[in-house]
Image (cartoon, rainbow, N blue to C red; front, side):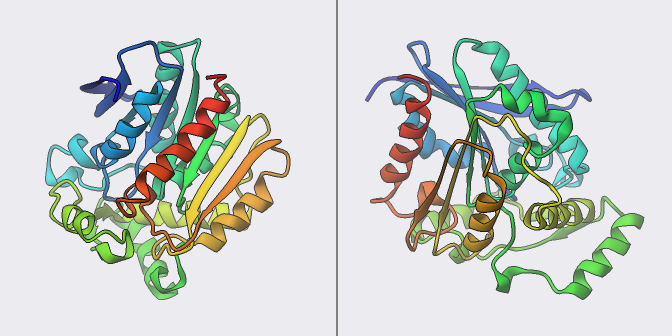
Length: 299
């Protein structure tokens, strides 16, 4: 295996907030760059295994612990305090712009997992970021939060009450414990997730309401993918017990008609965290993603 250089640092977003950043890079000049945005109660180190399979192929992988998550949390009040969607999108855009500037000759692909996948889809459907997104090699969404599976959807009364309270107490924190068995099939990974102190399962009322609103707008088509996106790759497992495979496929079919270069990749019976599904399947997912990126990077 080729040597990999792993570096840690901080990234300053437009309002001055410093977010934890980590990068997995080949020692040679990269042939492409992958920017990944993680999901709810998640952090970038959870993708270490995935990045260690991509970086030897010449793909520089980088990401941040977003506001409210991972090592970007410095107090209990920070947990899940992401700010409104507009602020999250501004953070995403500034980080993407920095990666485009760092290696201007390499294509940059932006990937989002789960909540991060829904946010990347939202970014690509927002007029303000149309030009930025058109400069990318493409977007890659896996197990994106377009909708939850039916038995994970909150009750209408709960959502209604949450909206009311969210207007009065937007920073009020709630803990929404996630059953690790719904995320991944490997018992060892389940144990690791459950015992990781950085996976705090906490969000503010504002965060939860905005997350539900984004999903509703994406699934209904009120948020529509803008022109100029060069490629779209969506991957989802049929065994996902968290985000809806069917909703993801409907979004893909409805929104990518004007995108010439696209693929919807189905993983039969795989769970929500595709890159850690089962030991024997991890290289398959990494190879699929690497092939998609490298074929478009002329590498």
